[in-house]
Image 1: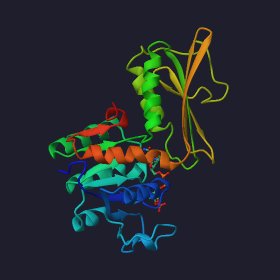
Image 2 (image 1 turned 30 degrees about the vertical axis):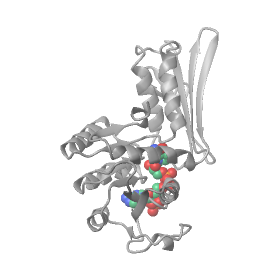
Image 3 (image 1 turned 60 degrees about the horizontal axis):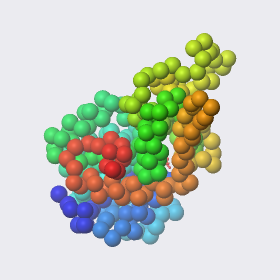
Image 4 (image 1 turned 45 degrees about the vertical axis):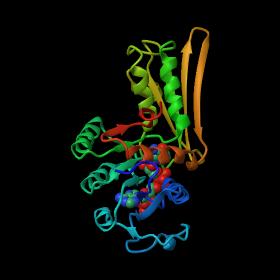
Length: 270
Ligand code: NAP
């Protein structure tokens, strides 16, 4: 196992995506990180330098993750592809003794338990983080703190219109954290009804979650608490994908020293 100050050999999956491009920059800019290869959905056998708009890096591109790990000594996989591939990529990484850091969402509780069992059986660390932005983690923690005193709460999350899943993993995680400290309760008027289906948003133990998808947005969330004669709004905005990279770097460094699966960056930021 690597210590955090030693060189870390990394493969990035999804290097041409918005997140992947930032991750390529972050890894190549970090002294003790080495980008060994990338796994793309196409361009097998090419070099990163050959890909449109990518930096001039003489690093191989694979479409077959299994072959990539067979041909390179790799410590950590950073997966920034799509919810459909996160689980499969983690299993391939585990088979090769590679520790996955995964930013895709859409994992069920059952997926997480299965993957945690594999990680522990193989003595490997793994991190799945629905949100790598440190500010968003603080928003979740502050929301949990506030919910003890102001249990009526609604969440509005806003994302770019290419996002596939709704509500966002961060909104669900926020609701889960809040539900740990408050009794489930019905909010709004007990007799309220929707004139248009979905008007009141998704329901998580009485908390309403509203998802907005528009071009121009990146990732934003407001957690609004209501009490007698007052409201409290806790808001976080990611202005660009660079906002996620300190969290990705922290996850890469942390995954080397754990031997289980951690779900959520809030569990490694104390
Ligand atoms: P994006 O711009 O659509 O990029 C995804 C990239 O992954 C594309 O280049 C895509 O290639 C590639 N890809 C898809 N399937 C692949 C596969 N099987 N193997 C290799 N590459 C594959 O999306 P994004 O905005 O960068 O987001 C990427 C993921 O990160 C999403 O799941 C998103 O929800 C998540 N995300 C997480 C955070 C966080 O903080 N955890 C923040 C933002 C986004 P093609 O276009 O050729 O399919």
